[in-house]
Structure formats: structure tokens, C-alpha cells
Amino acid sequence: MTQLFPRCYKTRMAPTPSGFLHLGNVFSFIITRSMARHTGASMLLRIDDIDRDRVKPEYVTDLFDTLHFLGISWDEGPRTAEEYYRDWSQLNRLARYQQVLRQLRGTGAAFACDCSRADLHRAGIESGCVSDCRRRKIALDTPGTNWRIATDHQQTVCINNPDGHVSAHVLPASVKDFIVRKKDGLPSYQLVSLVDDVDFGIDLVVRGHDLWPSTLAQVYLANLLGIETFPVAKFVHHPLVNGPGGVKLSKSAGDTAIRNLREQGFTREQVLEMAIKSADPAGLAFPL
Image 1 (cartoon, helix red, strand yellow):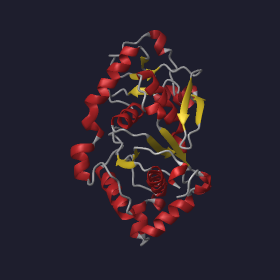
Image 2: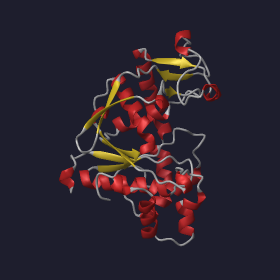
Image 3: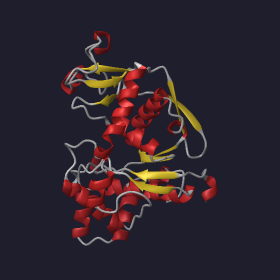
């Protein structure tokens, strides 16, 4: 089976400790581990914790408890919560992210925006600027402003699929003028995820279909920065696990939280089977 896929160097699991892990997270772990096996890639555990308002210690503990319970192994990254806090938190890499932000500033592609989420909501858009901030030329050092990338939605972004097929896409409206630095001065998810993938040598990115716009935004950003390795990485976007009514599971969905299933006596094998059956693996390009 391995010959069906080009050999890759490294992939990663990148959960966010913003809630207790659920069946959707487990399904993503299963697929990432499977793709690593089929491509010969090693696996990094990266914890996306740059959004400090959403991260709680109990969620970090749950993350490690769940991975150990499921028997999902990884080759690089923290083994315990203590090791994560000490050596692997993204907050330890702020100087690196600031370096990239300075590089973006030099390209002239970043502009300061003082639009709020409420402004975007009133305008009925997901992403972008509604106050013509780029034309207003707000200084990038202005407190309380986001840094956005002035995106060109006519420019195509090329994505490498694991079967070797390359597809071209334009940025969707959901990532128009996406944010690279937030109003609190911290880098955004789009920038942090890209920089970490590049620095850790990730050439196989496995994530849910809901993150497809982020993939396009991050490849767009890599092209802007002149990064050659990330745009040629392989990208796999897997089906999501949905709850009743087809609604995507959230980490507040207690019924499917793995810690609750463990407390009810479900075994590792039962939880893994539930995760697979709850998604639509028939749409995958490889067997689990």
C-alpha cells in the first residue's frame, strides 16, 4: 500500500487545548497516524496554544490522557504536560514569529486594520476590512489594530495532493485579507501554523475539511514570504465527525468527549471504532 503514496519526511498532530477532546479529534489522529504509516513519515505532536484565552491546564492534561488511552504514539514532541509547558509551548517561540512579522512588514503586504468583529458581523462578512483601512494607511504600530494581508483574490494558490495531483484555487471570502497579527500583538493562527510547519520540516499536512481555507491562506502566505518548502508539501483534508443534525462537533459537546466515554467504561477499541463510524471514511483516498 505504501507505494500508492509518495514518501514523506514528517507529519504532525496539532490539537488545540481549548476543550476536552472528542470523537472528531480522535478521527483526525487516526487518519494522521495512518498517513504517516503509508508514507513512511515520522510524526510530531504540536500543541497549538497561541490563543491563550482559550487554553486551560485541564484541557492540556486531557490531551495527553486521551492520546495515551488511545495508544496513539508519536516520534517527536512533548510526552507530558510538564514537558510541553517547559519546552514546547508556542509562547516559547514568540521571537521567531515576530521575526516573520518583521519580514512581512518589509514586503509591504501587511496593513493595519481597526475593524472589530462586530463591524464585520454588521457588514455580513467573515473576513476582511470594512473601513477601508488600507487606503487610510493606519500606522502598523498603532495600538489595538490587527495586521492583515492585502490578498489578491485573482491569484491562484496551488495545492499538492498526496496522489501527486496539483490543483489550483483562489482564496475564498472566508480568508479575505486574513489576519497575521492580532490586536493584542500576538501572531495569528495562520502565521504560527505556517512558521511551525516550516521550521519543523513538515511536508505532509493532515487536517479536517473545515481547515481548507486555512490551507489556502497559509500557502498564499508562504508564497508571499518566499518560502519554497511549504507550498510543495502534501495536503490531506479529511471528512469531519458531525453530531446530530449534521452539525460539526465542538469541544463543548460533552456527550462525545473522550474523558466522558472513558468514565462510562468504553474501551480504547470501542472509542476508535466509534470515531471511524461517526465520520465518512469512504471518501478517503486510502484505507485506515
